Length: 95
Image (cartoon, rainbow, N blue to C red; front, side):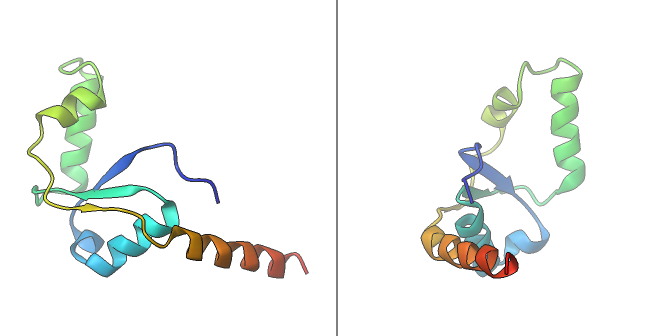
């Protein structure tokens, strides 16, 4: 599986509270995940998108530059292991 084109993804609430789950996601998706200091989730994300749609900010990059610094960055470590297993899975379902 090819890595996603985003260099990092902000995660919050729910599953983002589990270090194990975040590591699995980072490894499988081959992206860096960043936890937020914010406790708000989807509604906050929608509000951030609205600031771009309403021309309060020129881009999401500009919005993210105004946010508090992230608490933790989770880097992909075992992507090759998951990638090998995924390739094996693909071979099995073609049988």
